[in-house]
Image (cartoon, rainbow, N blue to C red; front, side, top):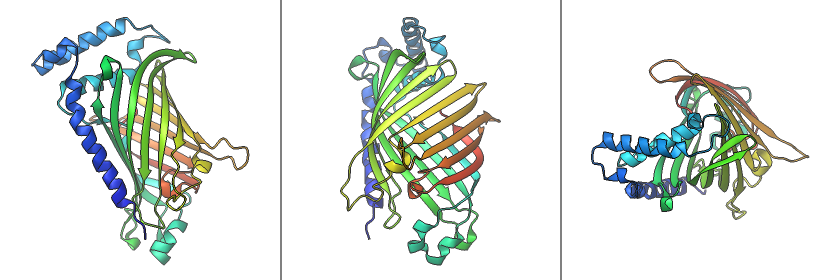
Length: 332
């Protein structure tokens, strides 16, 4: 029985070690602000420097300094430079204590769980943890940075005492991305960033539940006022046939993702789309997100998913899920 648990944990550990030591490299900066010892004065100096840089940027689609995602990334870069080491939000971090699936996928679990697989419930907890750390900022004195990101998504049968409340699925996704800041106009929007990255995703299980894949991706981030769009095509890195647990995953999730987000008064509405772009056996996956502030910095969160590959164990199974919960960090 082959296990990939050790493999994924080694990748995560090595990636974290890689991400920790170059944080000091970020401090190697030609900006005179780096020589200011007082942290508050140093941050103020960087703020003033960024304001001067922003004044020279062309105003595409409105006031450039009010583009929400660009503004957030700039703040994160300043915090990374001022601090010795810092963990920052990546994708949303949330917990939905109650989610309902119309049709739980039990077939992959029959060999492992036996008759207990039939006792898997449609109601379960879904939560996601996601963070990033700077590896190297302002590479070659340019608006180019290297970032390490990590995302973990879990489905937990918390209320299922009949099978001892197991975690039905957990996906681990470390990634390394080169982020390039740009000022081009595309479709009437500002192409704020281009990301070139490599990611690994695995569920750390043994056969027959083992699933994993690796991919290279190129992500374009577009902004216009309070609208942010992501276009993320990717290329799956090939594997040996005997090691490939999900050789047809592209037939279900496709070769890219399109995401649209709109923010107003800290309320964020999101639409994420995947399609395999095939005329025969065409498959589309859709996720709708809605978050809004409640109190103490928390946000209420509503998520609807209909499609394939919500998690790796369900990559070839159509899932319909509705969930409500609390969001700790949003897209922007």
